[in-house]
Length: 58
Ligand SMILES: [Zn+2]
Picture: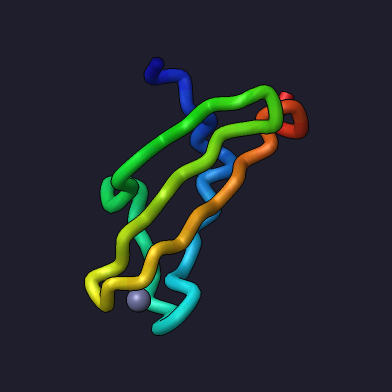
């Protein structure tokens, strides 16, 4: 499970404080038919969820 596309490495930011969230801050990664969801917990305590639609990365 290490074939992550490097191109679409979109950096996301916290919903609340807009701090940048690094990939290694992801607490949880879920791959579903709709894409990959990553759950980030910011140091401010807010939870940010991102969804990567893998069908568009092909
Ligand atoms: Zn934050």
